[in-house]
Length: 122
Image (tube, rainbow, N blue to C red; front, side, top):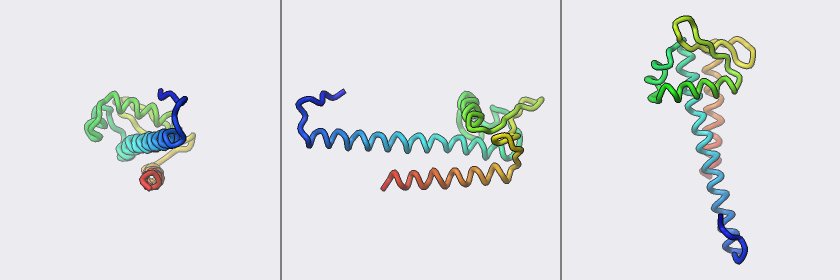
């Protein structure tokens, strides 16, 4: 941590400006990270799939897929595994869903992400 004592006004302003830029970059990277959740939703909208197959489609590890599934559950998505070990989406915040609903949700979320990234770059 930088020692604030002894810094002049210009140095303090520069340090604050740099911290604000770092904060914006961190927020933007978090928003980009949610793109993976949307990608998983798109894969699952196609129908039930095994984790290994999802990982292959997304180009990530099976551990990452499992983590993404946990994040989706926290976001209110109802995910279950069928008798063949395939994951499928059944609900969103208590309501039954279909492919059209999922894809509509993904499209809206992507719009929000793109708008946020555009704001961050300005």
